[in-house]
Image (cartoon, rainbow, N blue to C red; front, top):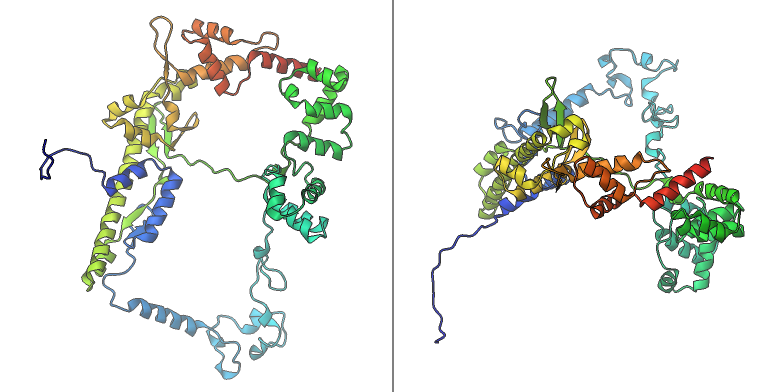
Length: 513
C-alpha cells in the first residue's frame, strides 16, 4: 500500500465549548460567596460593568448632556461655595466674616469671658481636633486604639519575651510557637527544627520543656496524653495511679472499666473519681483564645408557607449580584476617535458584560426552577418531617423541568434552602431508595437513617439494640434492609456499636449513682 500525502474534506458534528458557555457553566455551580467574589473581579476588570443601585436601573456614571469639563467646573463651584461659607477666625480684624454666623462667636465659646476672634489659635484651641464620645480630652481618637481580640500566637509571644533572656532560646521559642496549631498542640518534629536552626537538640528540648509551663496550661503538648499530663502536674495530681490512667486512654475510650481498674490498681470509687477529674481537664487549651471564625451560610432560596398550606419558593435577593452594562459610557467612548486595538478592547468588554448579565439572569432562573421542582417532589417532608422524605434522583428532576442531569447537579452544588424545617443543602433532598417489604413504596435512605437514630436515642440502658434487632424493627415498619446496611448507616452517623453503647450507659449510671 502506497503512503502519500493528500487533502480530504470531512463533515462532522461536535460540541464546542465556547469561552462564554464555559463561563455560564462555571457560574452555575458557584456558591453565592464565590459568585460575589467573581463578580467583584469582573467589575474591576470591565469598565462597562457597574453595580446596580437597588431595584431600579443603575444611574449612569456620567451625564450625556453635560459639556466636557463640566465635572471639573462643578467641583470648582462647590469648592468656591464652601470657601465663601468658611469663617476665617485666624485672620482677625475687619476681615472676619462673623456676620455670616447665625450667632455671635462669643455664644459659641461661652466659657471664655474675654473672647478675641484673632486669638483663637493662640489660646490653646488649636490642639482640639474634634470632640465626641470616641475622643479623649487630649484629642486622641480612642476608636483607633480599640483592643483587638488577642490570639493564641500573640499571647504566647508575650510570655516568650519574659521567659527567656537568651536570644537563641527566644529564636527557638518563636519557631515552636509558629509550629503550634490553634488547639495549642505542637505540630512538628524537634529533630527537624533543630537541624533547620542549627541548634543542639538538647537546647530545643529544654526550651520546649520551659515553654510547656506557659499559659494556658497544657499548651505545646504533642499529643493528648502529654497535654493532660501537663495539666495534672500543674495541679499536683500526677500520681502513679493517675499516670497509669492517662497512659491507658484507649481503655477509657472503650469504657472498659475492668481493664482500667486492673491497670491503675485502685478501687471502683477511686477510679470513678479519677475519671471525673480527668474529664474536667481541657483537651484543647488553645481554643480558649478562639478558633478560625465559622463562615455563616446564607441561603440561596427561601421557602415560605402560605395561609392555604401551599409553599412559595423565591430567590434570596441578598445573594444575587446586581450588575448592569453602562450603555451611556459605551456610547460616549465609542464616538470618540480610538485606535484599532482600543476599539477591539471596547467591543470585547461590551460582549463580556452583556454575556455576564445574561448568564447571571439565566443562573437565577435555573436555580429557582430546580428549587420549585424539589419542593414539589418533597412536599411531604416540609409538611410532616424527615420520616416522609421521598427517594429522589437527579434524572427525575431533570426530566420534570426539561433539563440535563449535569445541569441539575451543578445547580444543587453549594446551594442552600431556608425552609420551615431548617436550612438544608439542595443535595440533601436527593437520596437513594430502599426497598419496602411487600408491595409498599420505596423509602428514602435519609429517612431510614433518621429512624435508626431515633431508635438508638430511645433505647434503655438495660436493653441496648443490636444491629440485628434494628433490622427486625425496621422490617416491622415495612423497610427491607440488610444488617450490613444498618451498620454502615450507624457508623456514618457516628454511633458506636451496641457493645460500646452498653458500656457507656453503664458507666453513666455508675457515675450518677
